[in-house]
Structures are given as C-alpha cells and as structure tokens.
Amino acid sequence: MENLVKILKSDNEELQMLCASAIFKCAEDHQTRDLVRSHDGLKPLVSLLAKADNKQLLAAATGAIWKCSVSMENVAMYARTLSSTVVLFISPPGLMEPHDQNDFN
Image 1: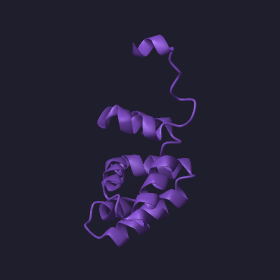
Image 2 (image 1 turned 90 degrees about the horizontal axis):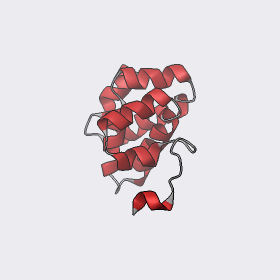
Image 3 (image 1 turned 180 degrees about the vertical axis):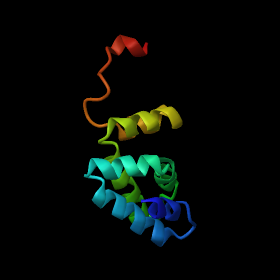
Image 4 (image 1 turned 120 degrees about the vertical axis):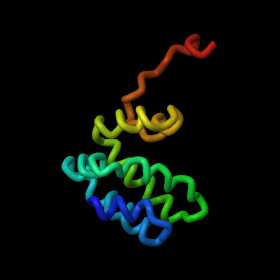
C-alpha cells in the first residue's frame, strides 16, 4: 500500500489512475482501508479530484474515496483535514442527519 500511495503523489496520471483503481478494488477489505489511512493516502486521493479533465482518473479516485469512506475512521480523517463540502460529498448515506429547514434561516 505504501508504494501505491507514493505513486498517487506522482505526476504520472496513468499510474495514478491505476493505483486509485487498485485501492478501489481492494478497499472492500477493512485492513486495506486502514492501510490507505496509515500511509496517508486519503489526501492524495482527494487531490486527484482536481484533475477533472481526466475522466478515468476522476472515476478511479472517486471510487477509491467512496470505498475508503466505508470506515468511519477515514471519514473522521477527511473531516479533520478537508473542507466540510468534501466531507458531505464522501459521507456514507445516513451519516449526516437531516436538519429542520429553520436551521438554515
């Protein structure tokens, strides 16, 4: 996992896409999700979202983020390090409680 995370930080978009895809495919396993977090792989995955012109890379990164967000520890990490907009984007259904409309007035 350490090497996959290192490649996520590289400039090679094809390798980044392949590594993000590998994380997506393996992140059904709790241990894999823990390894991604322990090797600081969450931030590089989110940074790949800025490459919206590369649809394959974007799909791989969003898939990996989605699978990693199954672990509440990862969602907490996203919440501590990223904006609330991104946290809302990746939070599993049911995590955020609905608010009364008066909460926004």
